[in-house]
Image (cartoon, rainbow, N blue to C red; front, side, top):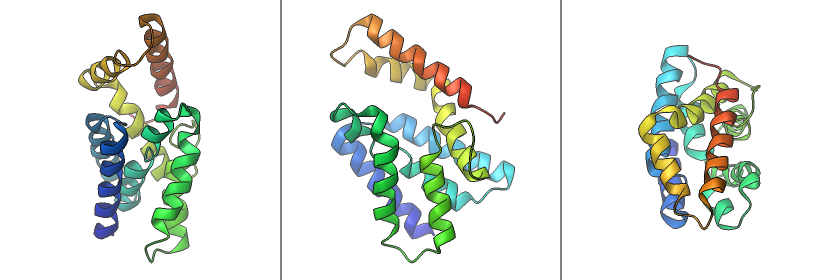
Length: 165
């Protein structure tokens, strides 16, 4: 599993390098929080580690194409392709894909999927990460009011998903 975790991280970082999203600071924060939650809650840390690395694998590409709302489905399809390269049991693949599919939901197929969704939320709660995210909005070709609306919607979304202390 360590090899797959490493390959997933390399793949995700190459996508970040190519498209500039998600922000590396936020990517790292999700992985760190996901691992912490998996340890604390007795979840499968390998599934969580792969899930947090793949959940936004196509976020940057979706943003570049103006298809942000499609990033979850794009990430699921790309994750299926990625995972097919390894000799993993079908149950493990399904649980990793649940982490990717469910990371914006308020109900989850597994404890690991709930952890990944919460790890995605935590990265927006940390002040430093939030300021970096808000600053990145200011670099887009949008007005301050549009950026503020986007930030408010993102914060509302994340608070509604958050289920773990």
